[in-house]
Image 1 (cartoon, helix red, strand yellow):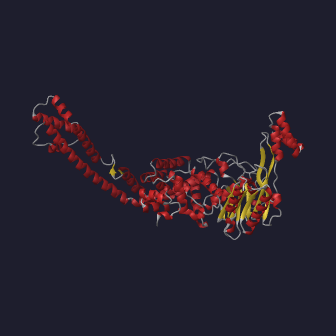
Image 2 (image 1 turned 90 degrees about the horizontal axis):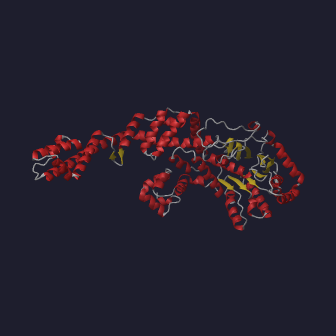
Image 3 (image 1 turned 90 degrees about the vertical axis):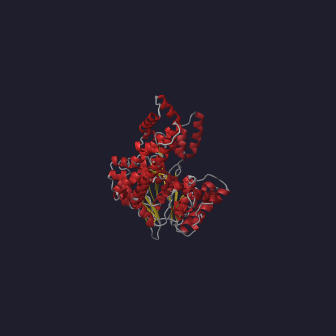
Length: 617
């Protein structure tokens, strides 16, 4: 296969890859998702990642139908990378893509959840042992030797559950011999400490070379010691060689010339002969030791390959397991029948949680879902227990709901919802949360909810609010969100404040058309808008949901129940905003101005709001 047949590989990229890796190795790196090999060849990490995503999961990437969907996908990968235990695991996470079969999703979920349960069950000391092994692995650049040594360290930890079972089956004797051999060889050279005799010969050769470089000084030193006649000079030189070079007396006498004309000729000839003899001896001994080490590695090749694969796979699944624990993620249920659905019970937004914000879990559903009253019979949600995820960098702080969903308020089975309500009421956050759940599920990863049902979609259309009011933005938006609806596959529409890109009258007409089109195409969709009253009548397959603000707290912050109320139009809350402005006014004239605005919403409402806020404090 030609390298340029891969997405993103043009002539320059092909040249960089072939010059560094060669064509065959470059193809193996692309097919195997090896980010490091491509970056070592000179590609930026971002470019390497984009090429590998398309090469290993191009069809899955096609489900991300809008730039906002792709941005949400990348944000999730970044959050998961934060929990990677090795650089290689981080690279593998970066090239994860949505999967195209439920079987593949379930298989990855099995692996990640097994790793999660295994990690959660480990004592702190065992966790530290595992992380230390992987830290050392990274310090040594993830080399084959580093992988073997990490495998041995994991074996010594005694951890044998979940993904660690593969470590328990490794041949430790063969790996110990392989680790020593890999440590002894580097770039085809036998390293110091690998063989005592080789070290002795190298040391002797080095000493002889040093003496040869200073031969005239050696002669002068011997003469200054009072050595006069030839025999005495010969004996003194012999003693110095034996003392400083670790050569044997036989090697010295064999190297001494028999027909030297003077001291310089005699010393120089001896040292040159010793250098030649020792160089040959070093080369011969190194060849013998290298051959023995290579035989050891050849005999242990299967054990080495298994260790490398096991260490790599464990790191990958363990990293995803740590992400799942950090956000208390659970296994989603996939709905594959004719009736599509997306539903979540007590779901949280991982991006908010990662920023350390408190998160009120929400329940929401579209289509023929399985959300039941039995699943919602609690009076709020307690904070997550600290145990089981103490290694994670982030834990979610959950706030109890002020108005828990009851059985009488369960969502219906409408496939499309128009979501309304207060400003800063969490409507956009709900869209993001649904997007995160669907993305994580289709990547075969646990989701941040107590329960979730997901129908894998062929197109995820996520559109955030963009406050650009011109025809070009309107046209480009319609070009990005309408074609997926017309493609004939399963589509999930998550559209936020479509009216922000055109005038209200036209926006209402276009949005009503989008809702009808979504219904007609049997798609799922949530449309956030402040124009709900202008969309009537909605098709029977669509409903209106609302989010409500409940007042101000003593700090004059808006109190919002982020749990939508199904089948109810949410209302904006200008009275709460104006009340805060009145209370925070810096002088009388400013206060008077805001009080004039307050007359529009009712001064009695303003005063009651402020009184309630003071009373609640």
